[in-house]
Length: 438
Ligand code: UDX
Image (cartoon, rainbow, N blue to C red):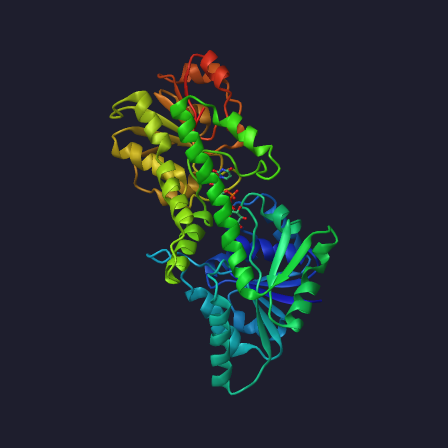
């Protein structure tokens, strides 16, 4: 059985580990966080991701998935090491490679036979070279010549659909610079090939660049649509019609064209900043990308602006927030627009009551000490509220009982930060409706 180590048990590491194990490989997931590893060994999944808990449990029981804090112990026995550790942004927006290079150092110190170190974390172009240099340095210190290769295999999975995305991806991008590594990577992904997707082999810098280009392109579509929506608001057009109108052009396509209150999460904001930073390091300013980021920052304030327009002075006003996670099907609040809206509201003297199906514990942790009320249901959050602002488009918010809501609230303002409600229906129920560009 092919043995693999995966370092980092965040979204990417844990999902990759569980999915490779499901394909019959022997996987050891490694993390320096002892508490996390202890939890995982006891079946506690540190993140909310549909289907993951069951997948992990099944593969642990089958003896194919192991968790440890000790990379050195498993290194001599594996053929491939995936590095899926974090690359948090530095203050200047560049990706901090500390953890990535730590893995490389340990790898160089402890491999005993040909092993491939594959970087799955999103890292700037040129990182593989740095990784290789660190490994060579360590091998030199040991005074031995163990053969190795480095490879780049960026991950494109989405939170909330991570398992499906990993199991049947649109494509797998692999950057290699040796035939031996290429063969090994091809073997590793063969089980997934049955469902007929493509593995795209390329040189390493192109693979590293592909990940940033993909995320930046998607973020660009979102900021572009947010600006179109903002203009629609001013000229009296309906962005939903415009979205359908342009999305049915096959060259444009209909995905990722949804305006809203800005993109969040662990990838888009970080990667857009890092790409702009890499460009500047090379003496080039990416004007579109830098604007994408500025537009997004501005868009995160749009729900607050609409609340101000609707309610005037916000002091003493009660606002219900529906949805805290940066998107549905996750409890992740990293760079979440909800946090920005809540901040603005509290600063303006409003009272805030929130409800989210899964992200409330995460919010209590992140925003501890803030005067935020947490409700048990969406209707409880709206009790006595002057306005309801929808920030995350969870399914359970899609068809509210408008009559029940009307009775519960004291005001009649609905701000639909994701354009999921039927405007005429909301108005017919007696509310004032504020969407994004419609
Ligand atoms: C993203 C990429 O999709 C994925 O390929 C990459 O590996 C990691 O980053 P993720 O952050 O999990 O995945 O979420 P995604 O579903 O892409 O949404 C990102 C953000 O964009 C969310 O805040 C979402 O609300 C927003 N978004 C998305 C829009 O505002 N409009 C859209 O049309 C689509």
